[in-house]
Length: 397
Image (cartoon, rainbow, N blue to C red; front, side):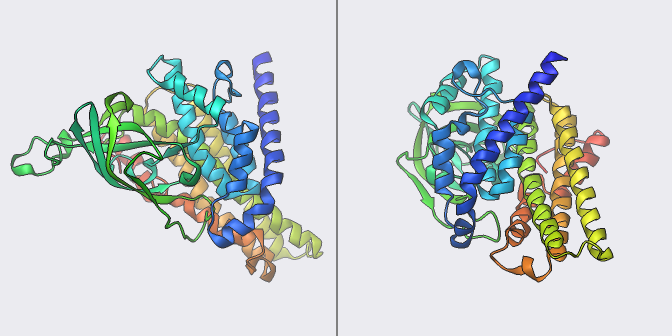
């Protein structure tokens, strides 16, 4: 009982910390959304305050937050600025997985976590679009590999320090590594290399093309890698191509609840703003408004249950499990689809006032739509769940 109470108290404190930071970040959110510019002030604050070390174990200089505690803090941060919360969630889930590796004594994990705590190192994931089918190739060379290819959706890259990325291992002549004749790509024979690459390495070029419908402040630009040398010791894993293998099952189990929590926070904000407008206009006796507010609140309640269920399934130190992947993806699908519904309702409840670009509801309406683009998409989630239920082979969707 004591440990449960302590965990709850700690979660409350971390959420309160996120709220305090969010209040400082919020005044900049509309400008960055309007200009599609990176939320630079927010990241400066997250770095100086130590918030980027939220999930670093305490013995290594961080706050030692659990997966659930990080998710709840990010939900709160998203209420104030969705772009800041989503961009930092990409950093936090890498840190959480690195902490998972650290607990197992895997190489490089402790050094990375110490740098996050001591230097404010910002970790950038390129897995959102690559996932099981990475773009680009890694050609063996003396002492390591030369990697080339274009990565997309590299959130927070304007202030990033190290990419957590992946490339397909190629033959020495640059062709896809496969066992098929004539150089044809054979997916079953391909190998994916997970590796750490400095953002400012020679041959890395950030293509500043992030101008989107929503989440416009995340700085999720494309990145072009051209013959970038990666030493052998910076390769952290070798994985099969096109498969949600054991390490990726763990990564997904950790990342998706944290990312989903951001969109729940965005929907929270849309609801709160809409309810405040109705209350302020003394329209509380409008039956249509009451019904729409009821739908919003029920939607948010179900989304919260979905997130709680996913976090309960994941626990704090998950082992590989396709069933767990199905659980977190089901929660993500529920949050993505209902989040869009809640923000649509908020716009209807607010009426014309919510239609202005100055309204936080209008920004939430756009931001929440990005939830469906993270893997798996809602449709892929259904197909994945069906294949798992029938015992059929499961690839990357």
